[in-house]
Image (cartoon, rainbow, N blue to C red; front, side):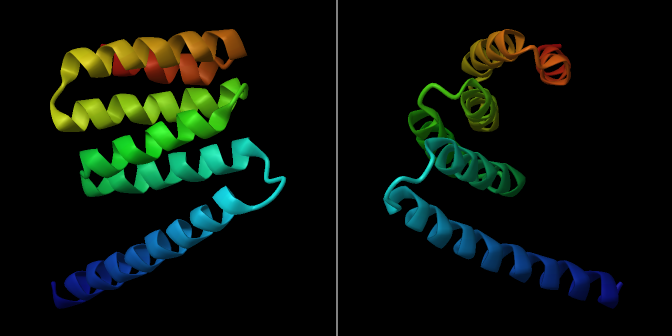
Length: 126
C-alpha cells in the first residue's frame, strides 16, 4: 500500500511538472512567429485533456476555447477542441450544453470522414 501511494505521488508530481512545461511551451507557441495555428490548437486541446483528468471544468473550458480560436480553418484541430469543450460542459454539470457540443463535434468528424471520431461522439451521446 505504501508503494502504491508513493507511486501515485510521484506520478502526480511528474504530471504537475508536465502541465507547467506544457503551459510554458504553449505560451511560447502562441507567440512564435509563423507557428502553424493547428499546433497551438492541439497544444491547448492536450492541456484540456490534462484538466479533464483533474476534473477542472474551468481549465478544460479555457483551453478548449483557446484551441477553437487557434484552429482557424483546420477542421481536425477544431473537432478535437469542440470535443473537449463538450467535456468541460459535462464536467461542470451542464449536460444539455455538453450534448449540443458533442453533436457539433460529431458533425465536424462526419465532415472529416473520421469514422472513429464519429463512433466516439455517438458513444458520448448515448
